[in-house]
Length: 68
Length: 120
Image (cartoon, rainbow over all chains, first blue to last red; front, side, top):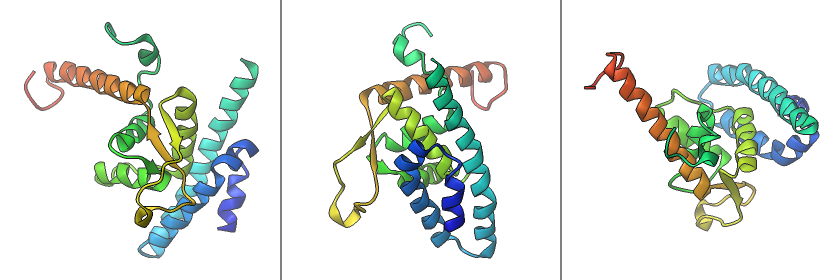
């Protein structure tokens, strides 16, 4: 969980403040419901991709708002 | 497309995640994890929204007026007071329906060319 919280620091602070708690709860719920080591591995492989790709887009959205 | 409200049409085509979130909220307020579960269930496991995709979409959808966060809570036995619930707006409903019409037109065109099963 600590690792996932660290990953969330890739998001802007405002986004992290707004949605970080919910995102952690969802990750925790998915981990709890995982049916075995393979499921957990897939969860951990997907999480960085999901976080990084969307964090970049959120930063881009904020930048676009700032310059418009 | 002719006949569509310009404000609605400006948002089309919808990103796939946005459309699925609107469908998930069409019949019930839901929190984030429930939206993910509903999308997975309706797509028979083909679509599993990541938390990042979900909340980036939710943020944008709130800005666009498609959904709102609701303070109303479901029945206590179903409620988790830590969770945040979302509700589709009338505008969100209109946009979802417009996207359905757009997709239906595409399927009709595809069928007319023999690309999809079913009659033209």
